[in-house]
Image 1: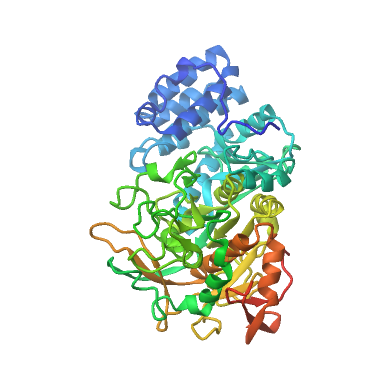
Image 2: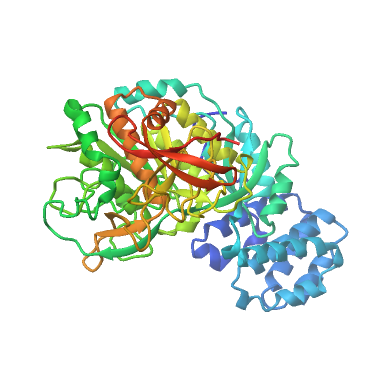
Length: 584
């Protein structure tokens, strides 16, 4: 499999006059999906008998004004199964591409159509029902994650995907292409994975006929497909409680009241331990989230503008992305901006507070730890639309572009998932760990022993949340996915103060609570440990965090009572840990 596989497939085929009236309004409006559906139907109709093409064309021309007449035209060719079904699909694609209020002739068409098309009609109806119910589902409709063995040719992938879907996007080529413009010390580290191979993963975009479950069955009929699976949603593990206005004093909220978590993780000692290491190797922390406000005044200088991208939009730079949901001038993710601030809000700049990594590694030129903001949701700031396919793509991007630490403050919602449901994400994480990238993930806010992914993957540092008194919060998960706990705040007590998208009318900082805001404190700690010793592996980082326990509290898990210990990590940052086996 070539590493430079194209991101979308090319649908070969000669345009047919038969489609001169099909999808006209939608195509003119630039609806890419409709154009892809049309292209697929054109390919299928290449084998249609010439006389039958005329009948199908007449059926298409009359379907909008007289559904019954359109069906009668198709019924005349029902003796030719291929041609009949191709015509039926073409007209149903036309109907189901319309707004529901415009489908006045659909019922007459289906009522007149020969019963030989009954199964096809049912498939379209089921797929339509799934799309209508999308807000209540735990996966993205109209697309499916498909894995092929490494080495599968591009032509074979296009052939298989072309039979079931209308388009596809590459999530993992099977081998990463490392950015050759990276600093030498980063490229040297990434030499470890130059020959690291995994399955090829694509995100197939479905047409209007198939539900996700049916497409899964169809893909798995092919011997060259490893598996096909739902593109599962992940949700943010943090809640925004309040937002405020910006002020202009010297980090006025960097104090024991607002940023109480700094004392709990023993940041002053971290600062003294780093000592003369400021100005040494720069560490990049990838915040995989819903985006970050790239022009936030308290993140200025600590964001990697060149490497901060939207992986749902062809890796377009975030500084060039317009915000679709808010009048912020450019893309701004609430949750992502808050997470980035916990790590890297700028220190000693007379604005707001400071991030964990910034406060402990600040010098005249700014923090030695920088944030690579990676937007991987499919909408502007929507917590729910992070899917496992885009998450895997974001992880692969972060690794190939030189991140040493990855923070994921999202987790899958349902409790009955297992690692096999996230093989694309697991493969990306395994490669990251092989490249000595430390992956940190929030463990969830279900106040239960429910396992959440990706926190439960072996090698990932799963993070729970504590109160100011170092006891576990009421909401923090207590599952086997938890390796470490860090301050997460609590309603009615204290929350985590951090950055928030700012405009002339909106605030520049906020408070939130959740494992979402505990995880980036651990990610920042891991980054500081890499500043101290660049060659530390993820396993060594976690071991050092666990080894320096100082405080123990009892919690209840599904396995009974366990000790959680506060730890100093590398003599410079207290967090807590839970001993357990992980990766099941």
